[in-house]
Length: 81
Image 1 (cartoon, one colour):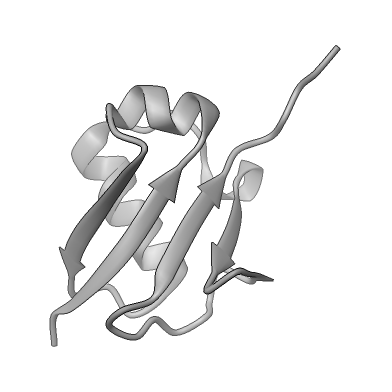
Image 2 (cartoon, rainbow, N blue to C red; image 1 turned 135 degrees about the vertical axis):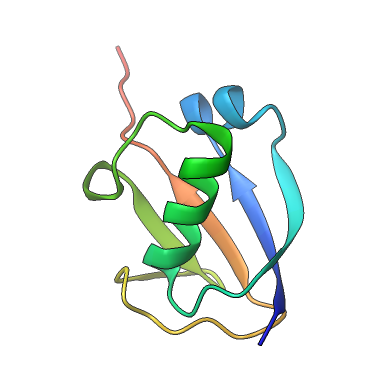
């Protein structure tokens, strides 16, 4: 079953994807499957174990089940100085 997910990207993921946000149609069941699909399609360099995922404004684990209309944010490691 397809669902439409709202996705936001930050830092290196935004640079690699070429957009800061998008509406994405997917058959992925979990956040991990969604990231894997996007990572494969757009050659994102970071593996999921280096990225945090927020679903509907709450940090969640990668096996959280997605529903249509979810708002996902992929957050890469942050470096600062």
